[in-house]
Image 1 (cartoon, helix red, strand yellow):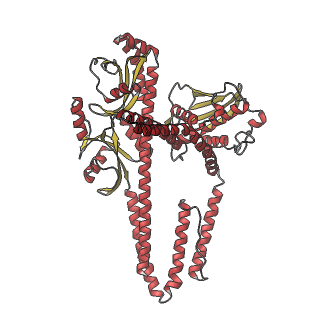
Image 2 (image 1 turned 60 degrees about the horizontal axis):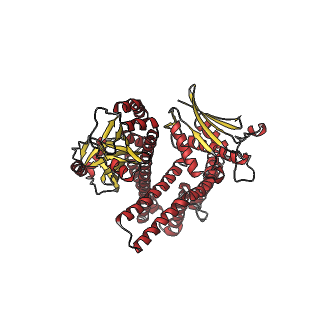
Image 3 (image 1 turned 45 degrees about the vertical axis):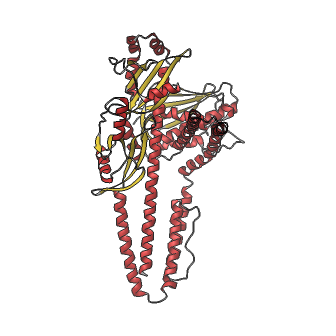
Length: 603
């Protein structure tokens, strides 16, 4: 009896340990995805800003004329705006021979040779390039693009952004601590190659300099305690610091040349989880041994037949039930029937409680959260089909590149350059496919809490996502226009806002297709009003007549008969905006179409 009870305690202990470890791995996977998504967003944002500068004909004309003061005059206000709004800290114009023609951020310093890897990569590829690169004191993101006129290289434009804000943002998004650890040997190698003495500003810990961190003191203590080296990657396990306990994860970080410059360190404070688990284990042990003493005193015979087997049935039934509740099992299994005695009565009561719980869960499926989930599931089928269509051509290109390498090898033409070009092509295509999946995951993640976010940035990302995922051959001539004039920040549910905008865009596109409008368009405009922001989304899809207008926000109401539409899109958008986001969603006929207006309070 004692052995069996201890076995139950052990099983519960190890099952809980397994669950905690799975949760830790999940948290680290989420952290890794958030880091990569944020870094990709930063790079894309920098490249988009660089492209906007490059497309300004006046800047290029003055650059070509070679008048340094005139170029400074026309660009210094732009740099001030970029610095204030987009954290751009470096702005260069560079001649074809890689001499600095103008540092807009330091106009008195010019004429030196720029030896950065990002510039070398852009020159080698003859196209824009963006990556992390070491400066004298800090790591920063650099983006460089060549400038051509009539096929002739005029020079290069480079902008840079420091990444200190990245770490606070990561902690706000995940609740986890993030640090960038620069390898000291990397600093020595980089200084020797570039002929510049680097002086990274940060705390020293083990083999690293803590260059950026959401909590540098914690990172220093973790590194010194764990003796983390540059060869360690993945989950680093639990680390105890005094009365606190942390779980850590590390990953290599590469510079612009692809060399390992150090690593990122993510840590999670699991102290409260460990304390709670310890109390739970102690309580289970005490309770189990008390039960063993009582049962051993009362029951002398028939323990296995009358007690242990029925208890085992109850244990299996309860474990199976909680597996179903957690979602680990899709089928619910109740406790097996037993004899009509005390244990059998307990089993019956437990079964009744389980059945009542399942009924409550079934009833909850009828609420608004269930409607939202159902709408997402219906949309996922269409999304997956569109992703498959979106991926078909890139996957075909990867297949062709792989076959070309095989034929080149057979013909003796597979040299290093041919191999590098083919691999780079495959990696670039794969990166594009990965970005598509990242966007897809972001737009269908369940919201947990309100975040500070920029209205204009989210609309731009939503439109890009809509174009990628909601590909429709009938909509190829439909234009979507949005020209943000300002940046407005609100604290609200970012994902729900994006999903509401996405539903409205999809509704407008379908209305234009159904109406057969030539030169169809969707226009998005953001207006600042008293105490709030208005987002107007207008189309020329024919509008809605008066009788239908009164019902367009009703659940299960749709004007698109003989289609797969279930009439939940606008209803759920209104529910998300008005109930969850404390805003307002309205509709009115506008010109030759419909205007949907989202109002959100600024506070």
